[in-house]
Image (tube, rainbow, N blue to C red; front, side):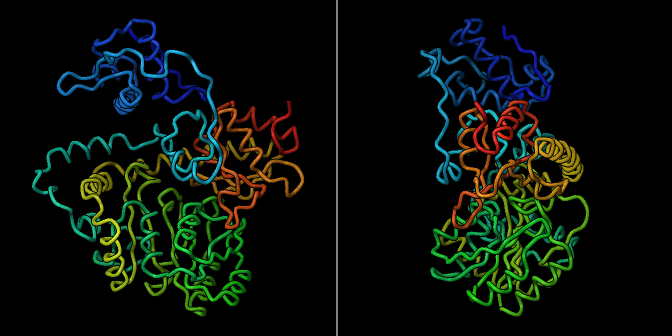
Length: 477
C-alpha cells in the first residue's frame, strides 16, 4: 500500500521528509483513497524500521498540509477531500526573499528549503526521543489540578532547583530563588533589556553577534557599540576603548561556543574582561545557551564574578529540542525579583507544563548520555566540514570541534561580501547565513555561519565548489 524504503546515506532527505513523500505518493497513485486508514504510528515505525518520533512528525506534517485527517480514537485517515488545495497543478519552487524579517519569523515556518546549513538548531533526528517520550508519558499522568493554574511567577520550583544544582557544578553559588525560568533564553535576554536598560543607553555587543539580540536591542532603542571578536575571543583593547568612549550600561557576551563564530574565551581573557567590567561599572550579560554542547572545561564569567556584575542566561533549546522553549536567568536575588515583575507584566508566567517536561528529561531521561552522544556527533561533523571547506580554499576562522557553528568565508578578495552567495544558494534550495545577519550595522561582510550538523548534503558541497571556483561570488555558470 505504501512503498517506502528509508534511505540513510549522507545525501538522503531526512527520514521525516522521506516518510511524508512516501505517503503522498501512495495517495496520488490512489493506492490510498479518501477516508482510508493509515497504519498506526507504532505499526508504521515497526514495518519500516524507523522511530515512532519520526512517524509522528511525518503524520503531523501530512495533517498540516491537508493530506490526512487526525481522528480521535480512529487514528489517521486520508483526507476526504483528496489532494490539498494547490496540489492540482504542480508549481515550481520559489525561493523566499533573503532578509532579517524572513530570518526572524518566516524561516521557522518555512519547510520548503531542503538544506538548512545556516540554521541555529539541531536536526530533528538528533532529538532525545527516549527522554521526551518518557517525559510525555509521565506528564500525562499528572493530575489536571496540578497544572490547571498559571504556575509560579519564578517558574517550576523543582526545575529551578535542578538549574541551581547544575550551576553549582560550574562554580556558582546560586539558590533557587535566584533563578527565573523564561520562555527560552531569548526571552531571558529580553527581560534583562527591559528591566535594566532604557532607550538611548549604550550597550556593548560582540562583532559578529547573535542576530536576535541585535534586533531586540534595536527595538528597545539602544545605542549598539560593537567590539570585535575573532579566533582568540574578544578584542580586549577595543573593549576597553569602547567602554571609555561610549560609557555603556551593559556588555552582552557568549563565553563558550560563540554564536556565530564557535569560539570560546580562555581563562585569562575572562578574568581581564571582568576587570574591565568592574572598572567601568558594567553589567555583564553572559549568554551561555550552548555550554551543554561543549566538551571539557571552560570559564563561566558568573562563577568567576561571584554573582556581582554578571547576569547568567541559559536554556535547553540547543540540548533537548528547539520546541522546548525553556530558558532561565540567574542573578542577584534583588535583580531576579525585578526581572519577575517585568516577566509578569509583559507575558505572565512561563509554561509550567513545558517546564515539567524539561525537568523530567533532565532528571530521568538519560540527558547526560544523550548530550554526550550529540557532542560526539558534532565533533565528527566539525572535522569533516572544516576539512572540506579548506580543501575548497575557504578560510575557516577557528575549529572549535564542538557546538553547532563554523564561521568561514569563500576564497576571493576582501570586501566581496556574502549576501550574493547566500542569495544564489537560496535559489538552489540551500539556506546559508551571511555575515550581514550578525553585523551591528548590517554590513555585507565576507563571512558566513555554517551549522555543521546540516553540512552532509552533497548538493551543499557542489554549490560551494562552484562558488569557490568562481572566486567567492555566485557559482560559475
